[in-house]
Image (cartoon, one colour):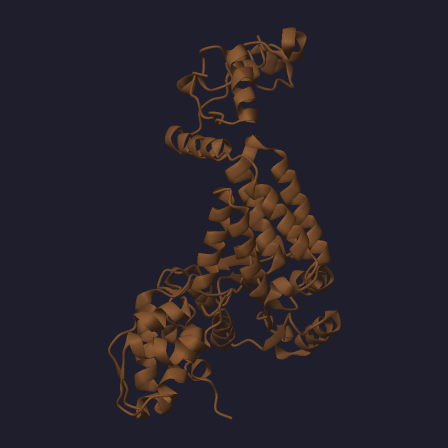
Length: 424
């Protein structure tokens, strides 16, 4: 059976590798590590089709290391232990170059499966390279993550994708034999969603369906290919469009639209934890103190769907989505932290006022640490006016409560205590 075009064009060296110049360019950290032969254990994090597997293969080839591979979809703890034993017995054990163990979709490994890797990584029996499309902070156990460098792989740029198409037309014998003319590329790029593998698969399908020497236009691409694309591609452009519509529907207090877009994601096979994480973020960013219970509901939803999974999780997600959509909205906390971080970057490391510094030693007390600090609980209404910001930015207002029942009550609370200090 003929190999797919994406496999036939898979780069064999760094010089042939398109994209990821922040890692493998002349000054890229990964190129330097490969050149020195000092490869740490790595987690490649990026969307599908950006070259994670290819890069792992190139690293093994250019550093002359044994290469072992596992797929998290089909491998269990027993498979992990067996491949580690093979790696320990390989030639790499007797050199400074430990074998490379590549695990595709490492985010699908359970905690016990990831635990089974720890000793091999820590003792240097293998150099782990894991590939994931999910945020490793959520999906990789902390003990394993702390032993790895996380490198982010970016989607292919338009320039890189066009270069890839031209490489296919000149370097692949099957494609070049058709002598097609690439007049327009926008439709191909749009349908691929920045996924190089998907782009080449679509291109090969297209070339095989047209006549020799035929001209490729956007209309031709949509006519020949679009009917074969799915309604929801969780790794492509529609993924981001539908997630955007989902979030904006909840933010816009439309439970009907929100549940519809939720259904689109569920039917498309979206990861249940991805949906729940987005709800957690939205509960704080877009609802916040207008309804603090929203964050509790979203957090409980995340815990529940992580335990239960599909299909029952759809019910829990629907309850959470409709609750969030019908909650009052406020982004006051979100704006406050944005402004506070901007202020920190602008003003630098300002000194903490002496009165609110900790004074665990006599010397600190003698030089004024903690002096004149007013313990709030010793005063009426558990409040004593004081200055808690550095002198250079005192009286700066960062948090303005929103205009809703709960935050209006917060504003009244602040007015009574701070009067005109912060402009409440």
